[in-house]
Image 1 (cartoon, one colour):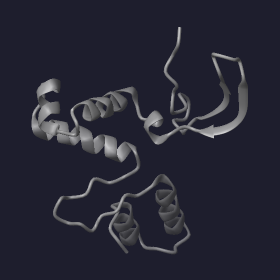
Image 2 (image 1 turned 45 degrees about the vertical axis):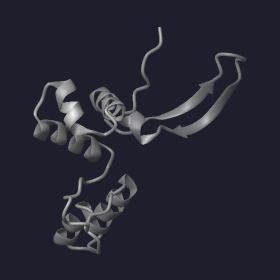
Image 3 (image 1 turned 60 degrees about the vertical axis):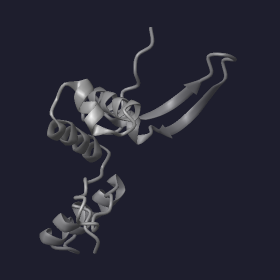
Length: 131
């Protein structure tokens, strides 16, 4: 039986990484530290949502019909997935937001902790607003 690869540690919730890969055809193995793609670190529910989003060609109207939910609910679930990937959904009219990567988020929080930026600046930067 094959199980899905967990993307997060069941104990502390941090990202997991792969240490060994094997070819089922020839038996070759490769060992090292391999980072999982960001989509693999999503919860199973978020992964299912992304798969449905792709099958629906990114059309939330189609997704709401398949899922049996309202358009705002489908959009809210999309925003959950966007946040789970480390980004902030932007308002369609602002044009001032940029995705915030996990690395950038850590840097912003480190700068805040070190006193290099204010809490207001950190909030603005975490929202993806351009400096």
